[in-house]
Image (cartoon, rainbow, N blue to C red; front, side):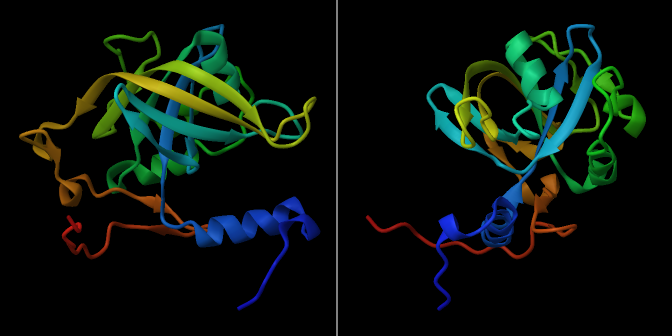
Length: 203
């Protein structure tokens, strides 16, 4: 095996190893509001569950040369955001929102997505998503880089409301085949759900 010391590599070199190794990664499609109530949207694949009691999820948002991206800045300022699960039905529109727009321009408008009013937060969700989660910001933790210029913001959101398409939901469970989730690989590559198999956990 090849042995690599990350301290002897550049950030980009380590980045390529991480995104090529930790696959597939689910994609959080996040909406936030600016102080001027512009609805921003962006996809992030550094995304996972934190706990179910209460339900919390985490999204790590990388900074640009120490500066927060719009999503982090808005979520921290407003204290809330909405996370949508990315799926095949609207992945092309999600990809369009990765364009670098100024904060006063809405990626939602650019991609032709449909805002819908949330129940418990002021940030709208998007009608195209089959699953969305309204979140309040539990913690925002600056990480990496230097003390004066962190490299990322870890946003931990507490889910205060779930929205799930009727045909996906069955007695408290989600049908993964009907959801058709899309995950991130490296570069421009994505993956669909693929084959599933089951293993019984040992007692």
